[in-house]
Image (tube, rainbow, N blue to C red; front, side):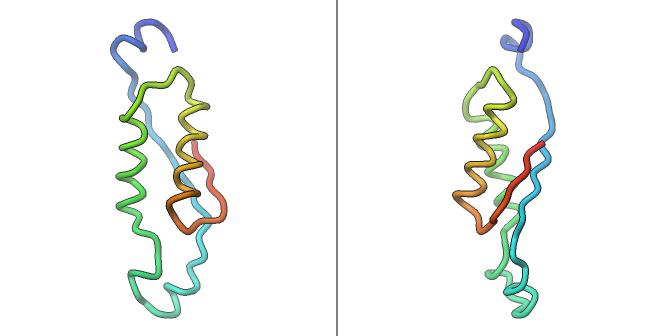
Length: 79
């Protein structure tokens, strides 16, 4: 990150793919049996704005770790 970016910040987008077993939700049609994607998006924003990082790699690993820990997913890809 350049000094200018460190001073004023930078805008970027996050694309997160989660591998989720949708079988229980599909079988039951129950919202409680699936992932709250609004909460996923809110947590991504929270993590991205909570602390400054110098490397996007660090942010991506932090996001992936948080998603795996907090949501019922077996794999995560962050871009």
